[in-house]
Image (cartoon, rainbow, N blue to C red; front, side, top):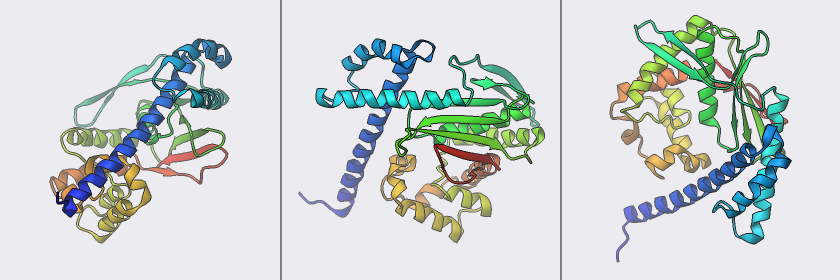
Amino acid sequence: MVFPDSFVGVLVDAAIGRRHRALEYARLELANLVKALVEASPNGDLEAGRAVWMPSAEASDALPVAPFAKSQIDLAFDIANAVRGEATRRGVPKSDPDPIEFSLALTDGTAIVCNIPNVIESATDGFVYAISYHSKSTKEIIRQSVRLLALCATGKLVQKAYVIQMDDKNKSLVLVNEIELSPEISAEEALRRLLELSKAAHIARDIPCAKFDKTGQAIAEVGTINDDSVIDAFETFVDGFSYERSAEFVVYGADPVFEHVFADNSDKKIEVLTALVQGCNLEKDGKKKDSYQHWVVK
């Protein structure tokens, strides 16, 4: 049998894809174990919940074979303890509050109907929060940032958002992401950004608009895909270590071609990426330190 280069490329893509999916599946199974433990713990008492949770955990397919099961159970308990402990220190209640509902009238005559969970209002220390027992949190951080815009636009007493997550790169096993809007973002500006994001969302439902890390930001800055800064950002990301762990890798494979990714419907893609970058431009404010990372929506 002859294996041309293209066939070898397909086989490599498939092998990396299987490894990627296997790793993500293992992380998801661990996160589900931790969530089940927390849900089985009355009033946040993890020790009491452990006795209830153990039989179902041991009977599930989520645990490795017997000699390694105990270490996985202990790890799940440690993650739950670390994440819930930080949540308590930040003022997160043991029982989630009811979602708040409101409608935002946009200047184009449409409206956004909001149903936002986990909102704690306060004149000086209000916040919205999310708890995650998974190590991946990018989507959740973006989601909470958009919720902050909506809460700002409607005048709710909320100054920040928390995404409290498991961190497998930290001995403490937990990372607190605190997100704030830039002081320059008024209620009117928040509403304007939500309008642009709403328009972009309608386009993105029909047309894939992958950001490819900083490529999307480069496109938003120059307003075109035909620029050296855009191509450089694309190649840097694809050639880097983080690409094979990205969502773009799953969709486009190991060797994406720039023209294939961005040439079709380029005007629409530019519009979407510009709205994403300008509407919810998240930046890290300093480095991660002591299980804490501060973010600002510029």
